[in-house]
Length: 231
Image (cartoon, rainbow, N blue to C red; front, side, top):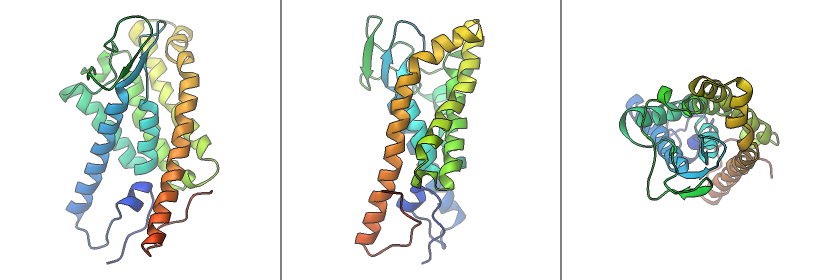
């Protein structure tokens, strides 16, 4: 059986086979997208509440960047669409509006589950959820061109994180009825340091995953995937 070309990390870990039916390919892609949507939901439950903003600090940015980098443009964006639909219509998978603990500063770590279920356009952080789709698409596009295997992977992750904030800040200003400068104060400045750390972690995770995949394939005598990331 001949494999099709490897474009993304997901294709290297779960390779397509040329003889696969279209239904099998669609089922595989949907399972991958759903899996990363659920991973984003879990990361949304790692939340730090601060006293100066209604938007909690979460690990979602990390999940979004890794989803885009692992799945590619369309599937990465699709995983975030699934996440948005799950939280709008079905389950409490969005970041908790209240971290589930008392006080102005506190940490909520996954359990007890205290997510938010509401339409994207009805919550202050809804713009960020739309931004997740854009960020995953951009990072996925770059990683399909092997940015996750190049020294400039950090810049690609930075671009993805930056794109995420555009609809997030604009919606926050509209929803809270505040000026753009005030929205930046609420929805950008408190998160810069944390997001630098999260995009740095994503920039390390993807090349490391590629290295592990390459070593595994060499160990099994299968070296048919694309070039390895830089050391």
